[in-house]
Length: 314
Image (cartoon, rainbow, N blue to C red; front, side):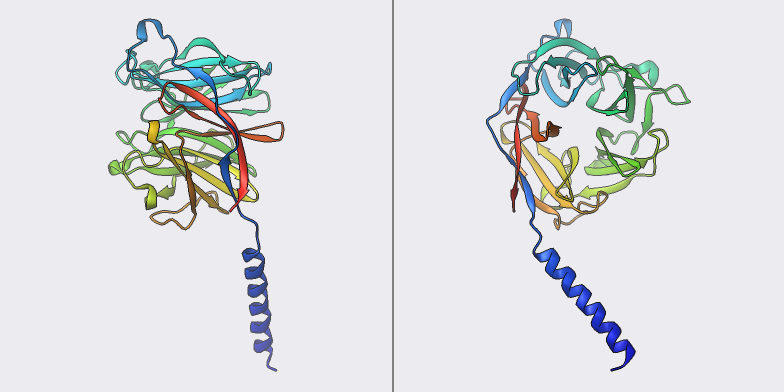
């Protein structure tokens, strides 16, 4: 037998073994695993209160003293041009209902280049002893820092502004979340250049210098309107990355779920990684004491709720 024949036999054998291993791999998908409990209701905003106000995109984390924190963007208030601000609740345990309202936590500041009333979608991660809150100012992704996980101060750029990067003025760059993979931080967010919504990602080693943007999810069954790729949230489970991408809020809420080995590819104009939907909006996956929980908006858009999250074979 010729040597190149042996080479091709070996290659074919490796390919077949790889295919068999892949075909026999157990695949998982997320499923709501309990009844929901309400942790936050529509708050009293004092002079900013309106009958139309709604708690929307939010973040949940534990402060330095162990107390659970929830900050939500409240929209349709009487605050500023874009009507949005951050409100804060605090709970003793993740599984407790009815966390304590703590008041308005943050408002946009045009002195730092932020759009009046334009705060959107906080997301908090703890790195060593410092809490990092990523948020949108209607046009940019920004960062604020905290030692205690309760009171945050903006980190300003060399130009004196809070915005770190944008997909373009007018494209509503927003809904940031950050996941550490290896030595890099992956910042996922959404924007709608040409009124077509996509999920983007930028990477950084130091949270100061960011790569150019990667378009990592767009179109397919979820559509490509300005709001078809909202609230991207990525977690790694069972050796796969799972992207949660919201299309609709309210009683007909819809979030599409994608599963990929590559954290920078969940399908652009195709659905090869799509695995299903959940009837929720703006979900955040919380891992606590070895268990997964899912927080999401209430169907009436009057608060935030939490449930257990299970991973089932699919």
